[in-house]
Amino acid sequence: MQKMMGQMRSCIDEYKMISEGDRIAVGVSGGKDSLTLLVVLAALRAYYPKHFELEAVTVDMGLDMDFSGVEALCEKLDVPYYCKKTEIAKIIFDYRQEKNPCSMCAKMRRGAINDILAERGFNKVALGHHFDDAVETFLMSLLYEGRISCFEPVTYLSRTGITQIRPMLYIGEQAIESFAQRQHLPIVHNECPADKHTKRQEVKELIAALQKQYPDLKTKIFGSMQRLPLPQWGIEK
Image (cartoon, rainbow, N blue to C red; front, side):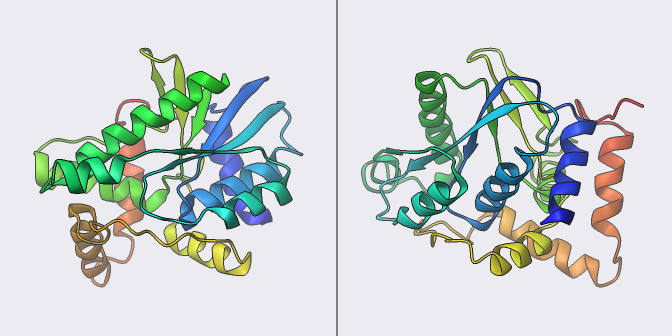
């Protein structure tokens, strides 16, 4: 826990993610990443020099996933929990029968979570993207779109007035998996039919193959994103 808190605090401080009085929603899907983010942020809340409020929010896609374990965890952490039920899965898979559902799903989930943030008066939302996600997204943009791009550590959305923060960018996926197992986090199985059949999974497997020959590949890619830097990726000295 101490190591995870240290890595997360470094990321938060270097990118100035949290300000005094922030009302932060943690987007909780039920996966290992978002649950780890929730647990570590809840622990950091007691020590961080700037006071902030925390609440967990879930967009229920309508895939018959059980979030009762998440609700119990939030109660244990003394973090309010709100779950918004939707029919996103039914719209995408039954009505529209999307062949490439991920893009449409992401847009609809963003819309649903923006509604929650507006209704409940949050000014920031913390997302569970980590070190490996950043590297994979960079390569996906390069290989599939022919451009150098990635999501930003901190993104202000002028249309909604919400700021997105990604406090786990210094934490690797293996460390998160280990943490989730040690903490016995109530991971909710993803029932999405498209899970593990995406371009991201293809890139994840490509990186794993390349890592055998270039063990520090991910570290070099991540470092280049900060040194280039991509928009909002530079760190003020």
